[in-house]
Length: 139
Image 1 (tube, rainbow, N blue to C red):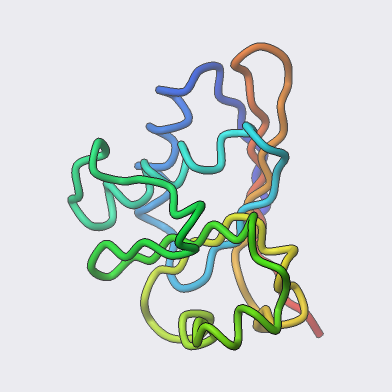
Image 2 (cartoon, rainbow, N blue to C red):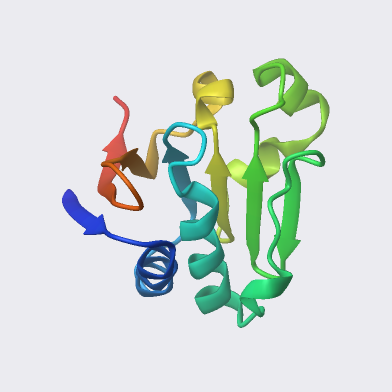
């Protein structure tokens, strides 16, 4: 990968997620400030990957994890750190064939596997977002 994209509204971000679902697998870590569009992008990915109606896809902000069949959505914003993630038994989601999408992966950076897809969303004024995709390989 290694692509830079632009969306100009929430619907375009959702549509981009639907497109990306066709090429994503395994672990996807989403970086970006609050309100950068991470959840919107994830909704599009999950909808396309699982057939779940986008209206039924919610952020797991207070429960950390929502599962939609073969896709799992983590929101780690409120997580205290990697130790809590391990204590909750979530480490099994970092490896394996299922699609795992993580918002706020900085909270568990030391646990991330050697390879994953990194998506960074950045505000660019108004509803415009920059979306960068890259394959990460940690040596």
